[in-house]
Length: 245
Length: 321
Image (cartoon, rainbow over all chains, first blue to last red):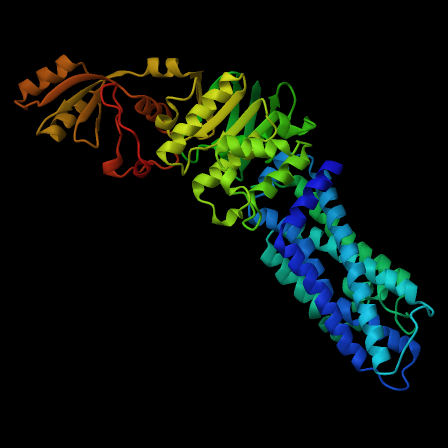
């Protein structure tokens, strides 16, 4: 397993796409958080101000991290490298495990950097406009950890989706619009259902407070993980059965 | 030593590989021959467990491929030369493959030297020519210094110099005691290189034999030139002989003695410009053996048998393929 993790890490780090998406994630997080923090108003409570630090970035950054995950398998099919990859790693579930670990870890580390960048940017803007807030209050440490975990899970979900669908264009064409707006759009017709859909449930991970939200943070996280597990396990089972060609 | 036992694979109602069994011995180059679409690539994917067969299994020194702990250290393969991410350098491509089987990085430099790709090692593969992809694919297959090699059409896209190079490489690898299994749809390409043949058509085994035996079984033929060639061909066909008009305008006849052809021509007052006994070529022996099993049999007239005779070897060119 270690040997495959090393191999997958070499692949991931050798591609410029990886670093382009990583930098895009960080820049986007800084930009969107700065804009959001600039909308702070007198009379906002602490929770609302803290919301400005953590909740805006994941809306867009998750797309890049999902994309990174999707490409892990989908590009192997697109370029045919799945053939030499499987020749070197014929036990398929081991290969799936290695990619999940490498992309998941990369998502967590990138997520930590993105979250740190968001929080620092947000705090700086808030103090510049004279509306400072302390991040050691209340549920903030949990929300920060939850945000980082959210990014890691997004990477894993992407790997599963890429494995399931195999064509990068289809995987990206379905999952990105879904994560960006389709789920919310569905919410206007079926408000009760949308609570349990992956990204709405997963949003509880980075919500500063779940007071007034339909789901507890833990339940939201569990639902998001369950959706991810369904996609990953489905992809892995198909991968086991499929021919490479 | 490779033992393929009863491999079968069907796609829906179409049988791609049909109860195929053969052995590939070490220290020899074994050509895996068959027309396009005869199931060679599918067989190779089945051997490496990349595709799931309906029946059968392949053993490499007694074990199925997926049971080998470090498979690329024992079995090197080149199935799809183009299988590289275009935005990765050749070196990083090999690095990832080496890491997956704990192959030391020093091997990378070595195989680049072996295939003559050292200068391009740090370039993105997106700009590679077909020949360079073949060389990179070969480098990847040799990475683990494997005792067995499985190569699918490694000469495709190579220039004559590249083909010559690959031939001597294959000879050298077999000379070192390795098991070399290499597919081609052109016997001419293989004739100088292989020791043994596994010939298939429509997924079935047609022959497994040393090359010399395969040639030995080939019939003698008679080459005829005449201004009334077509008429003569019709008459001979009427007698049950098999005739083919070659690209050079000569007629190759099998199943009739030269004397009988001469007599027949004299009887009908057909002038003969040439009447010569020739050995039927390897290529024709192959075409013969696989006749009726070819997926697509429409051959443009100008491409009908390129008859390679002993006296005047004709090298098949890209167009002939």
